[in-house]
Image (cartoon, rainbow, N blue to C red; front, side, top):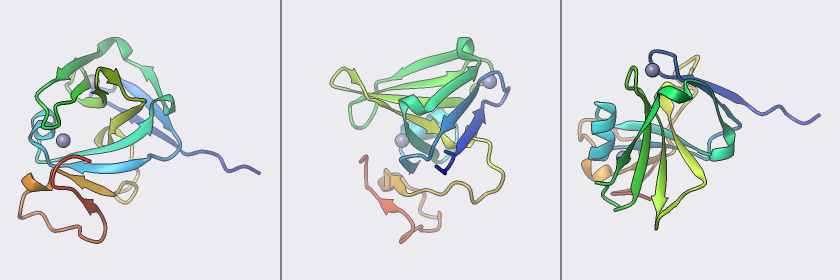
Length: 148
Ligand SMILES: [Zn+2]
Ligand SMILES: [Zn+2]
């Protein structure tokens, strides 16, 4: 019997936006860049990358707004979609040479996890601005000074 694919559910803080992801993420990322700090209001951002076809928005599509983040270190535009009611960032897509990529960067913090071990980072980006007091995850993550 084929194994059932994992379903990950997620929602924004006010729960108007609800979504579901099928299958496992391609990669889990912790990003320490300044833009991710601003967008989360926190010191780093946790994201999971999926193929776009894996995402299904179940409700709240009408309250989603997209901010075009053109001030990125890489120069690529990031379309950052968030709930316009409560402000939760939901997902980001990347535009390279004018073309939107086929994968979607989901905010891991909006996913419904049952325990703290369901998500772990595989890669850390922008370690050049990583908080030095954060314990090192060496051996658990692949570290990049900037983007991948
Ligand atoms: Zn919301
Ligand atoms: Zn970032």
